[in-house]
Image (cartoon, rainbow, N blue to C red; front, side, top):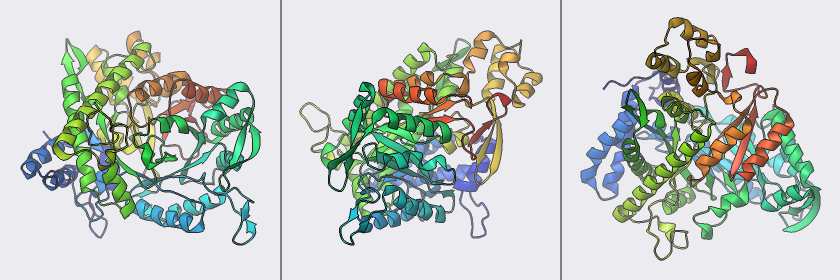
Amino acid sequence: MALRLSPGAITVLEKRYLKKDDSGRVVESPDGMFRRVAGNIAQAESLLGRPENASRYEEAFYGLMSRLEFLPNSPTLMNAGRRLQQLAACFVLPVDDSLESIFKAVKNTALIHQSGGGTGFSFSRLRPADDIVSSTGGAASGPVSFMRVFNAATEAIKQGGTRRGANMGILRVDHPDIMQFITVKDDPSEFRNFNLSVAVTDSFMRALEEGGPYELVNPRTGSPCGRLPAGEVFDLIAWSAWKSGEPGVIFIERINAANPTPLLGPFEATNPCGEQPLLPYEPCNLGSINLGRMVREERGGWALDWDKLGTTVALSVRFLDDVIEMSKYPMSEIDAMARGNRKVGLGVMGFADLLVRLRLRYGSEESYEFARRLMKFISERAWETSRALARERGPFPNIRGSVFDGSGVSPVRNATVTTIAPTGTLSIIAACSSGIEPFFSLSFVRQVLNGIEIPEVNPLVAEVAKEEGFHNESLIEHVAGGGDMKDRDEVPERIRDVFVTAYELPPEAHIRMQAAFQEHTDNAVSKTINLPPDASVEDVRAAYLAAWGLGCKGVTVYRSGTRAEQVLTCKSPLYC
């Protein structure tokens, strides 16, 4: 079957993923890219003692990708079978309270960004601004000052010549410099290469609920050094997120409660989009199943093909485990952590597409229950595969002392198997909705690749209109121009209902969907709580509290129009 890609997919692939010669001319086809990646990753079968499997899995991996049923993270598509051979998407680097550690981390950040990876950091170990520097008798600069060094280094390095580096900066809510950190991106020119999150503790949330203060701790001494009203700090987080989209919050103790290898240390930071908690020097390679293609025809409509999904999950987990074997990591510490824990993060994209095909409304009670059932199935199949791989290849080396080290617990190949990533560019390639997000709009302009704009109309509008017998060119033109399907008399009410978009959903609906997926996801869930321009600070505050109450590991809120460089811009004037 010939590979069919959308114009947007071809644009992205040619700009970022396909091989080029020395003059910058593209010398690889999309099909050739999938062949290159499949052949390279299948070599792991030979390295792991099963050379007879290599050609069979090469064909299986190629089919999985070329049918756009599964795609690995961007560095795997870019680098597999090429000189860099760095295949992981995200890394966490430690930043300890010394100049040597700080600038070692800056150097390692440069190496990772050059190879196409993103980096996350906790700056919580750095002593606060104006604290004593014993070696000189001077005053410390503080975390925010040193973050500017990381930001400047990132600005100077393009990832493998294909994309700007991405960072996550995290500071604990009990750090003395927390108020400065919360508001640092109120200036839109600051930290353009960073996402920011506050690591919120359980004791802070208790103080918030009780209406009292909480203690600040000097990381240099480990001693309390002051108190702040929890409500005042929380309100500032909500106000700043309302104004600029940041900071997000991560519930750090909830994340650590799910740490599969606690003897190796606690989680302090995540990858740039927040869905992957990682230990110092730990990488993770991610991949996503396109749920919109996991369907079969049934009684004149569509149904989820559970058998196909199960087979796809098993093959995808094997693919990701093979990626670990084939990846060339930028430093020895990362290589040791990658092979020691063998974490993979299988996720999904095209969830909103799937709901439309099943005629389920995103945000309905049925959609939440379906999400739980779906992710539970994926998780169970992924762990079944990891156990099978452990029997074939051996468990992950750091399994002793892990949550899998106990009587009656079956060994597993991977310390984690599931993560819900945002799938920004992957969803363009696969021509599907991103991650578990609802449709942003039925017609929008996507900003990609240094100002290139890709106009898009949701292809499901025409597909469903034909299936339901109300298709006409006037309708398609109406939607393409930014019109609402609800304005069209020929569209049945039940169809209008399933084409719900992000801003039509209340914040609680977004968060309940994130929580539904989180119930059966090992790591965390990337989900943006999209708010319209007229949303209030209280709406943001309520969203953060709902995420805490519903068991999410973190939350990001974005109010439309608060950033100059908005990735998606809808054509409807209502929310633009």
